[in-house]
Image 1 (cartoon, rainbow, N blue to C red):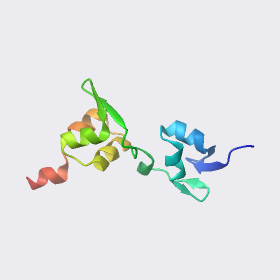
Image 2 (tube, rainbow, N blue to C red; image 1 turned 90 degrees about the horizontal axis):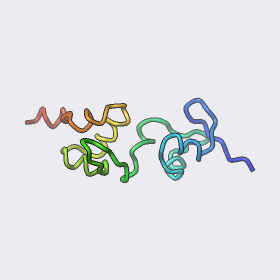
Image 3 (cartoon, rainbow, N blue to C red; image 1 turned 120 degrees about the horizontal axis):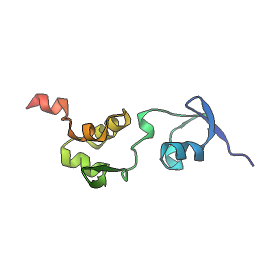
Length: 101
C-alpha cells in the first residue's frame, strides 16, 4: 500500500518524507494538515520544546536560551526560522523591550 501524499513546497510527498526533511515528528506534520496540503512557514519549525541550540560551546534547549537572554521562546524560534544565524538570534536585543528602557 502506498502512503498518502500531501502537497508541500510544490511537491507531493508522504508525511514521513516531509518530517525527515524538516527535522520534526510526523505528529507535527499531521497537526499542520489542511486538506491535502501541509501548512508551510514558521509554524512548522521549532514547535518542539526539545529543540536544542549549540552556542559558545554550550548546548541547551531553545526554551532555556530564550529564558537566559530575556526573550520569548516564540521570538527566538521565529528568528531562527527566518534564517538568522544562531549568534545573531541569541545576542540581538528585543527592539520592543530595548525601546521601553
